[in-house]
Image (cartoon, rainbow, N blue to C red):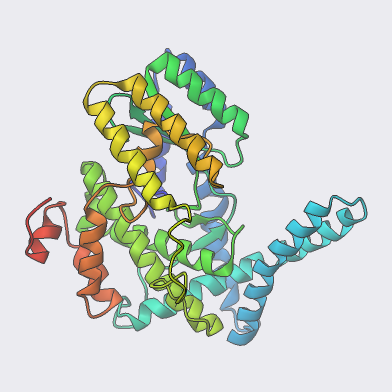
Amino acid sequence: MFHFVKRLFLLSVVTLVLLGAVQGSDSPSPSDVAVSPHKYSLFRWEVDHFLDKWVNKLQEILPWNSEPSREASIAQAQEFFGLIAEIRELERESADDNTARIEVLRLRRSDMQTDVEETVESEISAILVEEGFSSRIGVIFPPVDTVFAASPGALIISPRDRISQIDSTLLNPGIPGNVRNELEELIFWEDGVSALVVSTGGVATYPSVVSATGTLHDALVISAHEWLHHWFFFQPLGQHFWDNGDMATLNETAASIGGELIGDRAFTAMTGVIVDRGNESGSKPPDPEAFDFNAAMRETRLEAEALLAEGKIEEAESYMEERRQFIDDNGIFIRKINQAFFAFHGSYATGAASLSPIGDLLEELRDGSDSVAEFLKTVAEFGEVDDLPEYLGVAAP
């Protein structure tokens, strides 16, 4: 998921972010003016949610407030996420008499939300305790703290002559596709860079923003991913996040792998369902005639990189659009593929849009570790990308 804030967790740090934003240019560019109304307010998020979460936690421990059983809490969490599918089905039907029913379900879901957030936090914390992340008195630091909300978008900027994320700005969630296109085109022509507005599943503010529009399993994985960014902040890995693009990739990929491992464990503990990522297609062999998205995306990235290396910028951009249409013709819609697309998605080194060797190296480290904690605590000590191959005893890529 997308990690934007370098300084997290402490309200004083968020204040610094706010002060930095105030010290902007006296003569904003046309693109700055266009983007400004859509910017996401981190300060407002902290003011609205930081204290509310802790007040709620304190209220729960008061002796006259009874705590539901774990079984009841898990059942409530499953119902909460199950309501999404029911609401969507009613919305698809577009019947007038469904409006009242949809509103009832939304209110029901809203009433559950705080309790379900606490359940997700508790279940992830339990896995972290089992893995040895707690102190001697059983405290997880920083505490797992999540709010289900519409996750911000992000404006990603890359140079046109190479694939490299040089800037990013959090935007309000839910920006329509036509507005995204307008912003990207304006920035392209005004600033001469590649721009892309992307959606995110979560952001590592504190408490973290986690989208709850998917499944319970999705929410557990994303919540664990964002907590790892919180924890990495206090380790060399997170403190060197912004040193360079490779360190950002190392952080994001480690959080992705670790978030899946922890989230899968929590999901199994809650439901009894074992998540099998090793053979998602089951025992049936893959169809050789079927469209291979990963292979297509990798081919696109390789050819685009080659064209850019030759200075053929317009040709590379035309090629990426042709490939987007080709992928769309094969049933997978992507709104735009450009340099910024690969700069953003390439920071997750286990994904199809990345050519980074960091993903394979981290998976080798994970496979050679005796536990999730050993893997994460090892990678957390890396302050430079070269620490990873050096630890594995292999040549730096």
